[in-house]
Image (cartoon, rainbow, N blue to C red; front, side, top):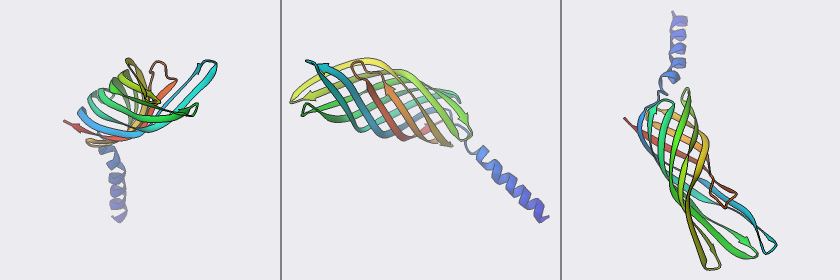
Length: 182
């Protein structure tokens, strides 16, 4: 009898994690924070320019998960202000804007593997010695990540790349949370 109770308890405990992670589909909100990076190389009057700087970036997330494997997201992404020295002069860059992405999920138990593709409508500034040069545009964005789900709460980690023209690399590595409203 004791062996049967232990066996039943073990089966119940092993089956519990399979019952917990059921994905909540629907509208979700959240936020992420992490490290943003900007780098570019160029030449000016025969001299090589190499800018490589990091800053704290964040995003505010709004999405709709239609089915377990597909969602659309609109995010406000602020890549912070990054600075580096070029020819002894401080150079600062900042980018922010809105992304619209399609997000694909591969549910594996309580974990979703994620991939995204979309567009980033951005505003950017480069400040050099008091001279402020602004630009804007719309470019591709894409990324990968994973999230752990328990009911309506998800904790996620992502790497995103923003293909901003005139920059070699603009990216964001972040961790965040989302909450799904049914």
